[in-house]
Image (cartoon, rainbow, N blue to C red):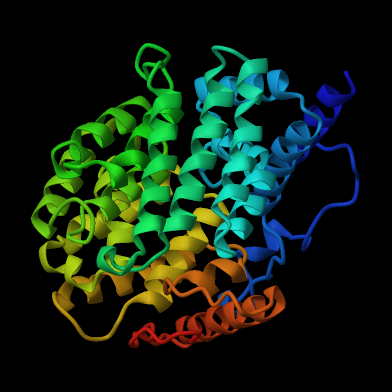
Length: 400
């Protein structure tokens, strides 16, 4: 009962239902915001989305440390079935599972960094013992499978395939095959489980012919949870030439996804599918329909105008676009969206989003430095907005 009470308290905190009368972060006078210059909007050190993510992560971590795996499995499956999301649209089941595997993944990753394959394997062997305590619980199987995937990537690293040591590649495939075996007994459609379908998409990286499966696997996932933008963004990224597709396939899948999710997002599915791909691959602009992408932003914010989402699009349109490259017309159209996003939707600034908007996250920086840089970027963009000047577009620089 203590575990359940603690979990309930954490989840209520994430959803703003805590009984603590002291609000977290900056207190906002919403009525005053309409008359406030946009360059002087309040900055939030922690946002509603960050608070929700933290509470859910800690809930998963706490239950795992208490060996309350049955309770954890129930909570993950319930969140998955209900399609429960944070205010910014991240599946709650994903975050609970992330917290639940955090200790094992952290310890195993340290062993990987030291080249200690036996210790890394021992950590995962211990974690798999929880499956004996919770047979047929696909919520727990999901946690362990995702731990294998995380550790597999730790072995592989970010190098090009030809630069990865053979032993590391072998470890990568072993962990991915272990994850595959864990979820293979469960049918995502039969169980109505987008989180199980998401594992299948994550496993594409270890497939021998992923290009033939990628579109179908992502179609299954998005059909199960059309309201989850994270999955459409992942689809777009995996349709890039560096993964399983091409720029032509990216354009094709963006249109298909838009059509299949029109009842949820209007034209927003097109924008979600392209968003991350544009951030990491400048050539992805080549086939982009600027009008459709901008209409998609409007449709998304008409349906989801939480400040996490609004800040994400404001930061992207206001700071992240490079000045030169293919399809300058589309770049200009997207940058022009900044003014109406700020005027119509932006009520507070989330500095971490503005810092990360350019796709560069300097791990060596302390959080306070990231906050300061994010605040600086937001202030500069909003000052230009207040003066009626266009957003600055500049080449992406490390740590800029």
